[in-house]
Image (tube, rainbow, N blue to C red; front, side, top):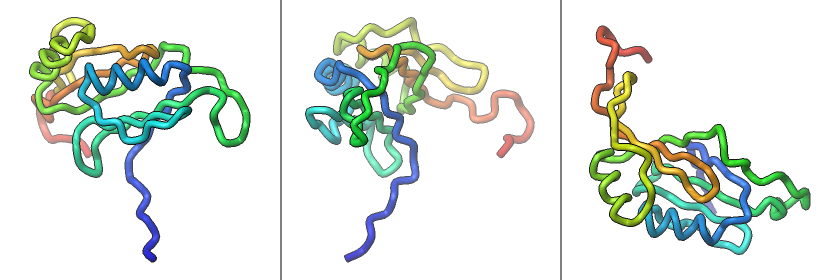
Length: 141
């Protein structure tokens, strides 16, 4: 039997007691796919493919070591979520009933994006790249 390959991406995890609200928000309003839906753990994915962004949510008292940790406080984190078109994603998310914070705008680093905040206070920055080299000259590595 072959050893499974580890993923090569980040899986940010937020501790929360709002798993049901979180699942409904991501699934119904943001069009995320539910990957794992357990009593104490939720994992969601935006888009398809091995590199699609995923977020994880877990009850503060559910970590396997038995230690209860503090829930996420709802401030200071912005998670950037790539999308084909920030304008189309904004319209779709608004139509699904989520509150979008402002209109999509062009950022000086070459992204067009808008913000949405989930029930836990996690701010999502849905973006697409409109200019991969906004400062001119050669792109840096």
